[in-house]
Amino acid sequence: MKVLTDPRHTAPEGGTAPAPAPHLDAAKLFRDHAQFVASFVVRLGTRREEVDDIVQEVFLVAHRRGGFIPGAARPTTWLAEIAIRVSSAARRRQRRSREDPDVQTVAGALATGRNPGELAETAEALRRVQQALEALDEAKRAVFILFELEGESCDSIAAGLGIPIGTVYSRLHKARKLFMEVHSRLLGAGPTPTTGPEGRKANSLMVTQ
Image (cartoon, rainbow, N blue to C red; front, side, top):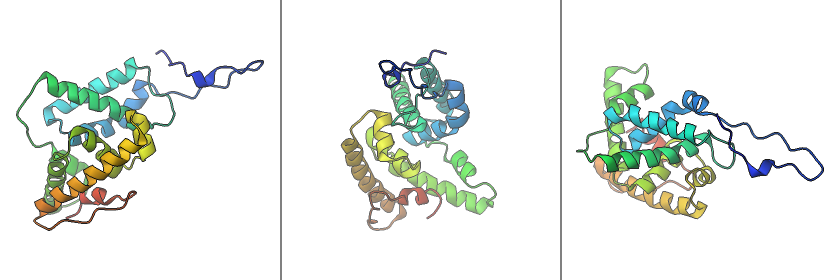
């Protein structure tokens, strides 16, 4: 597989070039991050029966790009940018009636060892989270998922998605406010205060009431 040339690794005058940063090929990326990509595209709204095809296409694009070269972005945020493009293209190719994402599968993965009652509660909590996510447009939803649910830094998100850091902060602020408003309504409660800039409250909503 062709390794992308990084201009940072040109040899200084009269010296030898430093060793290039190790890149991750598509096979390594798939082994390490296929589950992340699958979970990410489900949260973006991909239908259950389309997830495998979308994941496969994401890693085909990663292969065509020559793999991941370490830098400001992380492998996950780099793959997220590809996943957003692939998911959007799939929706444009074929408009279909919306269905609930496969929250039962996600709940099972999160709740290994729980009894059936707890699994049902987790699935219901996940369904509310997904419904609240669907109130966000794709750009805000992607930033919210990466920061609040996947724990990525704003710097890494900006680098991975190729957007200014200020845009990340703006989208995150608006997404968090709308998400919490919708989620609170789904719980039948009043508005819930938002978390601070580095909060992770939405992550706890994945498994708690």
